[in-house]
Amino acid sequence: MTSENDAPPLEPPAAVSDMPSKPKRKQSAKSQKSKSHWVRRGVRLVVLVLCALALAVLLGIVVFRVVNPVITPVMAVTKLKGETLRRDWVPLEAISPNLRLAVISSEDGQYCNHYGVDWGAVREALKEAADGGEPRGASTIPMQTVKNLFLWPNRSYVRKALEVPLAYIASAVWGKRRTMEIYLNVVEWGPGVFGAQAAARYHFGKDASQLTRHEAALMAASLPNPNVRTAGRPGPLTRKIGAAVERRMPAMEARAACVMP
Image (tube, rainbow, N blue to C red; front, side):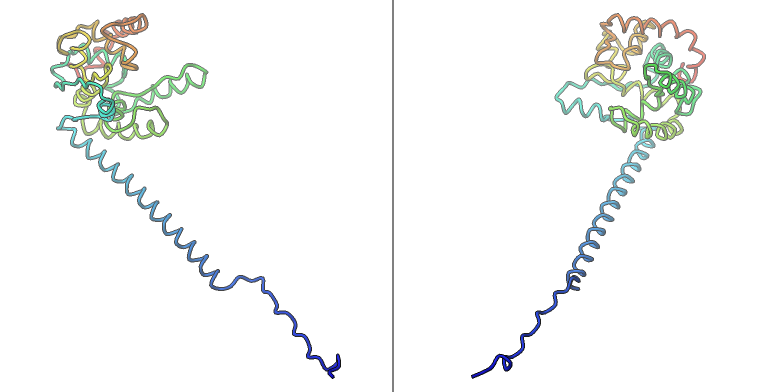
């Protein structure tokens, strides 16, 4: 018979370690390294895409010095909506001097004097906004042109920031007359109506070369919102703005010399 003193001693339980095993630690480090790799690849891809877009825009500016733009983003959206696209490109010489003078009087009074951006108008707009006045744009004709050709229509600080360098580059490459020619041929003047020639025929039933001073002033007055302000059938507000533009035009003739005959 075996006594209690002769029983084999009990072995202590194995100690449980709180430290993670080495394979798990290696697996975690490998996972983090993989995530970092994909993040770097994603950043590189974004940078490459942005660089490609920038190069495409710069190439477009150079090409449009001698080649007329075929379509703009706004035109493309209009076409995708199934709307009729009215457009007929004409050289600057086939557009009435009245319209050239009217858009300078209405949109960019210092057009012939600046290099793409009118910083005086920008300061005035900022001051008015700071004083609690109604915010207004300070976009020059070059800024509006590059926006129509290369950017998106929705307002944003990002778009404005992009307009500034592009306006300087476009003005340097195109010059004043070519910039005005492109602007007057791509700007929207009604639902699906783009360019001075299509607009003159749509609103007044005549060629752009035959526009009177009054008609040109009404067309310039409709530019901020051509789908609401109709040059051919102007409402009270459009008439009021058009009259103000027409009164301003004689005093602006000297400032518009760079695009006049």
